[in-house]
Length: 617
Ligand SMILES: [Zn+2]
Image: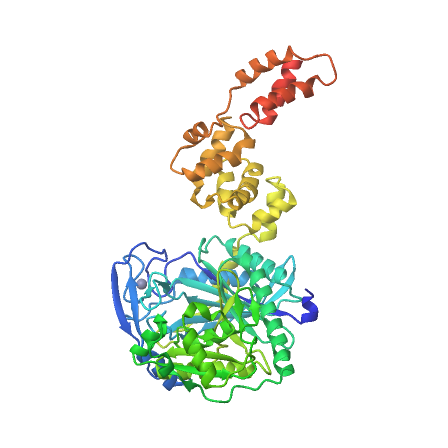
């Protein structure tokens, strides 16, 4: 795809948890196993200092919501529960953030105001998230060109969510973990791959501080993209940087399909939905559909929106397994409706054949028509149809600017309209944070090596190939690599094992996540002691993955990969030599062939070659 021609624009918001205690109290930032306390809260809206948030909407939203929370032994105190004002900003977190800012050539503010950003989904007990902008107007120099940095922020992480919808609870162990947010300017001449590469590079830059958290969930990217004639869309919550490319490709595809759909709707001379939805509850009185039956029994209604000549439009595919109808369903879900039923899907599964026939007859619907059904309480149904009608209406002229949630497979769901700037107001419980030149001067002396310096060192000092050095520098295994090499293991063995062998094993379905540093340490130690051959590393790891509690000797024995002694090989070689013409030019090759046939995977190839040479001479 020609992204230049499409007018792709893209910018990143990079989030990374810092490896220090919580931002506004002394609690641990390490996530815990089991909650020590559970409680329920009802959030009540109060007028914010700027009063910009629509109080009616907020009230409506919050009055019906109670939230469940889980507290933990070491990671939750009264601050996370919003029973005590926040403490001073964690100094170490501030220093880490400033260091990262220095690496990005940011212009810092000398006085920083902590701000409250309204968050009304319950993920923060206070009803807002605290954030502070430390600096602006910086630059990230990457191998793919320079990227402007608009701002660097230090903020508190939100709660995690567990459990099913309806019974969900927020985990407060995550709330308040220091999080750094880096917002890039538009990336020059972006392609999905380039955006991914820039994000990978930024991630490796942050890791050079050794003061950022590692592992699942500790980084998160939002990506803002648009294409010509399309919309500006914020895609939220990409946890695996390598998914970024796919996420952007899907969003470009979605917008292109919506543009096609716009033309199609105009070509068909369709009309925007104007008529009000019709109440068809009576038709469903004796329905066999459990969901609709339940909705009616709890005083709900079933309503119908007729869409003249719309057949096929609602079912138009935008992304794999995502239709225009799925988008409309998202809009309905955003106002609290479970889902929608529409005629461009297979209606068989809903067991409503008779009702559909009656609807068609009563409304004189034709083959080319479509309709949407929603069953819920009346106010929710009306709200949902309102949102759906507006969304369909908008499809004639534009693609709406939206914030969308990224799913694990890379497609996204509508979450809410793009947020405005009115969500912020000052935090009055904490005084200003001062950033002095003296502080910055001290921190400048502590700056880590850049990714380029690390990469050059890997090539020079550890004699890795340029390619492998580049991979290792960006790898999440980099620290593991360094630690193992620090223990005296051969970098040229460790790097390909961590980067190539593990990837290959993962591809084969081997659970390589079970391995710890101790496993690798034992593996390379055993190799050094010739307990098995280098060529057998993949086999040893594959066997070990299913029994990670074994020690290396047990694994080698059980997998039949036990090494053979030098003496055994030598004795065999002496015997084998008698069967060949040792004076001929092919003697070495013939002997090697025989020996390798017997000892492949059991002894190191170089060792066998040495023995063969010695025996022959
Ligand atoms: Zn705390």
